[in-house]
Amino acid sequence: MLKYLAVFTCLATPLAAQEVTSATGGVLRALDKISGQTTDIEISAGSAARFGNLQIVMADCRYPAGNPAGNAYAALEVSEAGKAGTLFSGWMIASAPALSALEHPRYDVWVIRCTTS
Image: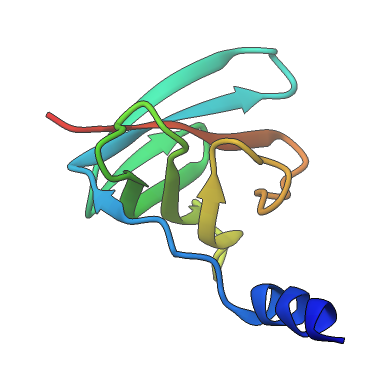
């Protein structure tokens, strides 16, 4: 019985959260599904960029502390020119682009990495 109690205690303790660092900006990759053109877009945190009809605002880009080449994730808001509302608002993760993706019939956008300078 004591053996099971020890196992359940280990399972009940939360895993340590990984420390992250905010970057000065990030690099996104955008795809025009009709033309097949891909473009890397470098955006500073708090700034906006355009790709086709899309307006992309990056609020923040974070990466594991001490590992700028590690898994990046970015807070983005994407809207389309001439249309009310946003198409996407949330965090995109470089290692799992389909987990939280922009859904658009013509364009795809995903995070590549954070920039530190």
